Amino acid sequence: MAAGLVDIAGNVHRESSIPTNHSLDRESLYADLVGLVESVLRSDVSYDVCGVGCGGPMSPGGQEVSPLNIPAWRNFALVDRMRESFGAHVVIDNDAKALALGEAWYGAGIGLSNFLAMVVSTGIGGGLIMNGELIEGATGNAGHIGHVIVEPEGAICACGSQGCLEAEASGPSIARRLRSEPSEASIFERARAGTMVGRAVASAVNLLDLERVLVGGSVALGFGVPFFEAANSEMIRRCGLDFSRGVKIVPVGLGGKAPIVGAAAIGFRGLGINLRKSTSD
Image (cartoon, rainbow, N blue to C red; front, side):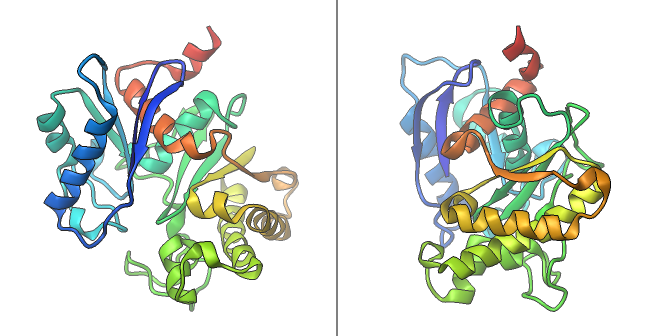
């Protein structure tokens, strides 16, 4: 979990992070979140909105969140709880959609009208910008690329399906397979994760006519070159249409600050601010 103070220009003034303790119950985990947010606030600091990027799925408007990688928060009314704790306008959306907004605002999505932004970390998710607009879907959950099937006979996923990208290339799935931390993964395992991502991305590129794919998250950025080279190789191998050739999978432009800036983008959007317009004025 990470928290920070971000201004309208995208500058991060203060930030802090703590590991997500998956052994805690929902109230203890929420207490951790409150303490983290309070650690970046001071009595002399005012703020207009609290933007939150959370793993999905979630109910329309983010009223209740059910992140698959945090079972204790299934159907958790995070918006109401945070309003009670901080007395602020709170806006919650999927963390990958937040990433897409942040990248469109101040990252590698500047100048792009059609792209997919992905988080490859504890979970795997995506946010879609199409014709310059964030895609919501029927319930606000568009972009769950982590549940595209990449290995039909593969591992069982937390969603109940089998062979999902998240079950093959997320941090916990890699740790289970290796019986060690993902940071200890060999070049082969880093490339395997990239191959799985490239396989899922190829379907999205062919389906949606994308310009580029931006990937962040601790696994993708931590695995680095072997991951991105394998992802691009697999995508190229599976994208044979004229319009899909030449698309590239690249790291997010905001690096490690992408989650915090993305959460801020969600908040500013909730205030009715056009982020792309603000940065071009």
